[in-house]
View 1: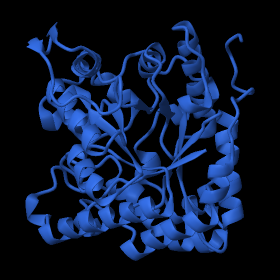
View 2: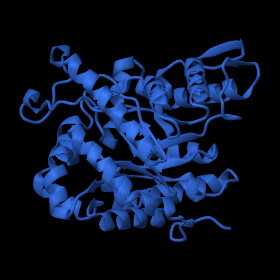
View 3: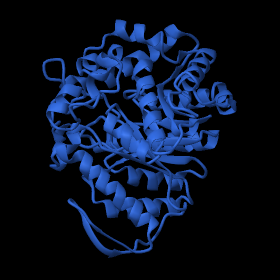
View 4: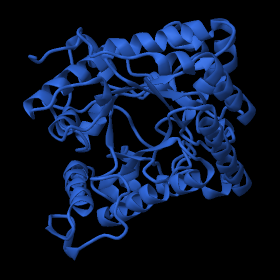
Length: 402
């Protein structure tokens, strides 16, 4: 099994004192609250952490793209990848991912080819649609999100795969283009997709045989089961077959000597992530996304009735979290001693048939020394057992004929 550490690179200072009415950070959050020294430290510390991941034998580091929020200072994940390439030697760099609907796709194709050559083939190219806030920032209508994504995806594949190509689409047009450089990996870097829930994304990934991450770290197992089952059906309909290498599972992990210690130490950072950072200036609620045209009216048709509440992704579930609720949730989470963390991670991976773990070790604005300690402890106490474990296809989720 492969282990990739997922890092959101949040602004490294707590901002709860700026909340309006005790609930939400203002949006937009005025630039007067931004401290460039904090941002500089944020980048320095996370790049140091990624160097340590490389040195200690982790399989990869993952980071993504967000805009105009302290939630993550990853406005350009490709810039972060370029910096990481210079600081690491062997670790895979999962850009998870560039937001295809919001950018000029030929430029992305060129930048990713550059990064792949600079790293000698260490890039995993994740493509995502982003969250509603991103569309407001870039002045892109949310109903255009999916057609722009699919058009940009086709352009990238053609730019990487054809010696010279032309393209005439609704959003972008190119004539007689041959990109230089071309990807180091041939025919192209691996492509992955994070899927938070919509059936159209699962269908697209299945049609194109793209590995996925079903849900985020907080997604309940039942909803992940539904996504994996439907994805397997979509793969089969396109002549493909679900394998462990098609799936990665996201988990939030904290290592301590006991569950109680884990809750005490990481609980406040988990609360800050959920109540303050997550979806700042945006909205997770599926009904609101549907009303805005970001997802379709039938986006959750594949979800079993008992999992519909989780699929609704209510903002209140995160914003109104309490310490008592965190303590309850922690009983099901891989927080605690090494044996418990290892067992829980392997059980989830085996159940879903996923050969890659996306592990978050630093929710909220965890102090740098604390994050580094988690990296080193995980590498020593948990990583060897995970990397030695071989995941088999999940029989419980098999819904397509052999």
